[in-house]
Amino acid sequence: MRIAVLDHDATELELVCSILTSAGHTSSAYHSGADLMNQLRRDAADMLVLDWQVADISGKDVLYWLREKQQMRVPVLFLTNRSGEEDIVDGLAAGANDYMIKPLRRSELVARVQALLRRSYPHQHMPESLEFGPYIFETRAAKLSISGRLIELTQKEFDLALLLFRHLGRPLSRAYILEEVWSRDVEIPSRTLDTHISRVRNKLQLRPENGFRLAPVYSYGYRLEQIAAE
Image 1 (tube, rainbow, N blue to C red):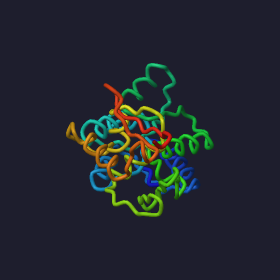
Image 2: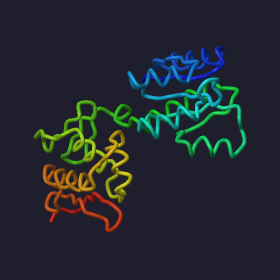
Image 3: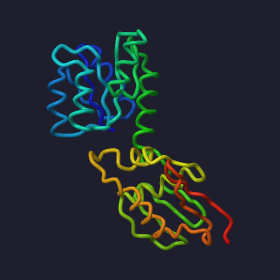
Image 4: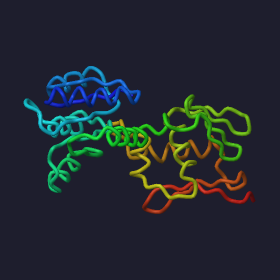
């Protein structure tokens, strides 16, 4: 994965990049918040590791720009010398996904980075094939077949169907579904989710006679249930 690292300390910056490279990632080093922001305008990163204190633009200000101005939802790990509860809460409230207090510990850094990437990019950390009865999802190719018959789906329909099956029997809120499937989109029409639910229900034949039911949960969201065929 491509990880951009911002730190005012050259030695610390080199260390973080070295650790990430050893863990199999591609790291890019930035001493300046402005340089990082300019680069992100041209090319996205899969994750950011931000030092709190940077001379020109602080990591917190970069994060604010990222979340509020650019609407980017890439995972962000904060590095900080500040260990006070208020400072930590402040960083998380600004939009950071996790934080580490310096001095760095190599194994902890790798573990926290890997955990954030798994949560943010679940498809890239899944088995290549997932089976739910006659439904077979090929996660890398974004293909779904039912009893050997390939079903034509858009990427969003595939993502939505896979999310529902991975949480079989569990009610999912509208907010959670929108975040998981449409997280990178800035504006989503209010009926978009309902339209996609209807398409997935029809294309995948999610009806009681086929052993599954996709039903609304009043004032909450949707739930996919496996039931005995009628």
